[in-house]
Every structure is written in structure tokens, then in C-alpha cells.
Length: 302
Length: 304
Image (cartoon, rainbow over all chains, first blue to last red; front, side, top):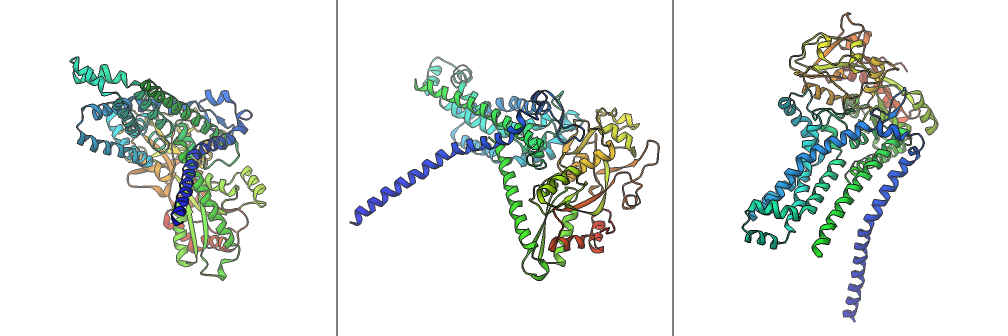
């Protein structure tokens, strides 16, 4: 009697837990769609009416609060986001790949574990702290080292973003290298290849999809980062002419101005248009990375 | 997608201010004097310039009236005024006047016109790095530095040699557009017909402007006069080029000879009563105005 009751209970609780887990899993999809829905809903009323899309994408004049004529041109902000992201990738992709290659191919087991913990700790530092480092520490160093009139600029923001994305690029990149079957390495050694030759001629080509995905995830991190770039890039609306010019990014603009914009006003809605644009960029980058990773898995299974 | 993180924080902030505002209006209406133990909360959000001042009022008021807690938040005058219009705040601090369309919107939303109180005067100072030899700058020159199509780009155009600044470029440090300081500076220096030149380094707080200028030999910045530190220099300002410059001090702001002095305001959403009214009366009393002077601003004589 009691035995069968126990059994019934365990069956019930098992199915309950199963359902709870299932809801948790599927709710993520619900949240993503809800976020998209709410952001787009705030943006749509101005999208095809007050907002001149041509001006939006081609004008450098971001003057949302002008009393003469408000202008909503995001070209300078796009240029800011693009320049900081590109320079950050130029720094962080080689550094992240190098770290991944070292960890996966050249490093002993013990130092590897220590190094991984330390580098992954970089990813856990809050972005405000990174911004503060850029603002207070890197600013005078950049002025001193380059003679630039101001040290919070593209270079500063890119260094900070690079430090933030290296851990991601490194861990995804290392997984990609680890996924290359050992048979490839053994075959290369049997042919008399040196360790560097193995890395260049065998591992990098074999893991190239995984490494590309690592780089794209790093890009996604850099495009969406807000607080650190708000503090480290100078928050200055202009098309940059060199890597030592201050710029302003799309994310920083939303963070700085949304609090002030009156709910439902044009300025408020245009900020949501920018938010939608950023979500589309993030979506494209993440999807591309996902498809690329799927590509690797497909090949390995075949 | 990291963008959402800032959104989440924002939503959280709005929820918090909403609940606090509700809690306050529940209790504030009853008249706080009768129940000293009830713990009335007065929330003031807005001008970043005024955060230090309002905080000092809050601390001193707590000593006098332990039953009333004054909570202070910054964010910019625009943030406070937007909260007032949206009906989520009962009191906002602002370093600029509410504009007529803002008053209109508030009236429509809340059924009554917001009430304005001039509670102090502030002088905006022009800051440069301490190594900068400049002594006087005229309002016209400041307009040519900050204004759209302005012609002054180099320190040498002001007739000085800024040796510590290798490139000679003037780096304009300013405030983000949610700041009352930004709006007042535009009005006082550029007038109503001229825009800011794009490309200034826009900071989120009064103190940030001074901090950045203190680390940047090429920089010029504007911020409240109370934010001065030993690492920066306040430049004298003249109305016209060639006239004698006036330093930003209590005395020059009161007598009106300093050209960049402005009133600071408290706004209530509707005509205040209970704890809100008592607090404002105290702010305008001799005791409250003494604190204004202690913090480095200029007291006003109560007008209402």
C-alpha cells in the first residue's frame, strides 16, 4: 500500500519537475519575442511618419532637443559604433586566437586551468568598472603616449572593449581547436610537421568555422556594450577622422537620453528606433555565429 | 544581447520611483504633523547640479524633523521634469525653468499647473586645466568656441599659449542634453537661435566635467561654481571682449555682475500640502538658505 503510494508520488513529482523544466526552457522564446514586440511597438508610431528615414541614416546632426528644429541623424553614432567595434576586433581577435592556440596546443594542464580561470575572470568584471578604468586610468596614459588632446576616444573604448571580448573569443576559440580530432594532429606529426606547422597548416584551417563564430560572438559583445563605451569613448557626436578622436555610440546615446525623453514623445520613440536597429544588428550577428557553428557540427557528423 | 541590460535597469528604476512616489502621496496627504512616528518620505529627483544642495537640505531637515525622510536622486533636470509630467514624481529639482510646452503637458496630465519655487542661485563657471595661462574670456569668445559654426578652434586664437596642450586644439567639454546646465548654458551663451557645435565631449554629471578638465590640459568646460577643485582653474568672464572679467563668487552672482548666474528651482506636481509644503517652507527659511550658502551657492530671499 504505502509502497505503491510512494511510487505514485514519485511519478507525479517527476512529471511536475519535467513540466517546470520544460516551461523554463520555452519561456526564453516567449521573453525574446516579448522584448522584440515591446521595443518595436514603442518605435513604430514615428517610423513611417515623423521620422525622415533618409535623414535618420545619412545626417550627422543628432540634435534631438533642439528648439529650432529637432534633427535625428544617426550617421555619426553609427560611425562611432562601427569604428570602436572594428578597432576592438582588430585588437581582440588576434589576441583571443593567440590565447586560444596557446591554451589548447602549447600549455601544460596545470597552467592551463589557472590561466583559464584568470582570463575568464575578466569576463566577470562589471562594465561600469571597465568604463571607470578607461576614464580614469587609460585617459591620461593615452594623452601621454600619443600626444592626443584628449584620452577618452576610439582607441580608449576599443582597448576596453577588446579586454572585455577576449575571454569570450578565447573560450569559444579554444573549444573549436579542441574539437579538431586528434587524428589530424597525429597524422601531421607522422608527416614530420613542427608544432607551428601543425597550428598553421592543420588546426587553423580545420577549426576555421569555430574560430569565425568566436570572433562574431566577440563582435556581438562589442556592438551591444553600453556603460563602458559611454564612459571611455568621450560621448561626442562627430564623424571620426582618426582613432584618437572621441565618438559617441548608439548604445551610449540610448543610455544617456532615455531617462530624459518624455514618454511617447518623438525623441523617446526615435531612441526606441535605435534600440530596434541594435536588436536587429545583434540578431544578425548571433544568427550568423549560430549558423557557422552549426556548419561545423554538420561537417563533423558527416 | 547586452542592450537589454540597460533597459532592465531603467525599468527597475522607474518601478522603484513609482512605488516610492505612491507611498509618499498616500502619507503626505494626511498631514504629517499629527503623526510623528509615521515616517513620511519626500522624494526629490532631478538636477544633477543640485544633488549636493538637496542632499544637505535632506540631512539637516532630518535633524529637525526625524519623522520626515527626504530621498534625493539626480539624473538631470530633464529627468526630474519628465517624471513630474508623467505623474510619477511629486517634487523635482531643476536648474532651468520648465518650458511652456512642458507646463502644458503637465497640466493636461495632472489636472493642475506645477508649482515653481526659486530656492537658490548658482553661478556657472568656465573651467580650464590649472596649467592653462588664460585669465579672462568673453561671452562672445565662449560662443565662438561652443556654438555651431564657431570660429575659435585653437587656444592661440584666444591670444594665449597653452604650453601643456601639445596640439593646441580646444577640447570642448560639456553636459549631456538631459542636463539643466546644458540648457541654461545654451541659452545664456548661444541665445535661442544658435545650436551647440557637435563634437563636444558630453559628460553625465557636473563633477565629471571638472574631473575631466583637471586631467586634460587642452580642455575647457562649464559647470557649477561650487564644483571647483585645486586641480582646475575658474576663468573670469566678461560680457564683451576687452571689458574687465568678473570672477564667479557669491558677491558677483548676487549683484548680477557675473554674466553666467542662474536661479535653481524646486517644482511640485500640484500645489503642495502637508510634508511637501513644510519642507519647501523650511528650505526658503533663514535656516534652509544658510545651507545654500554653506554648500557654495547663493541664497535667495523668499519671494512666495
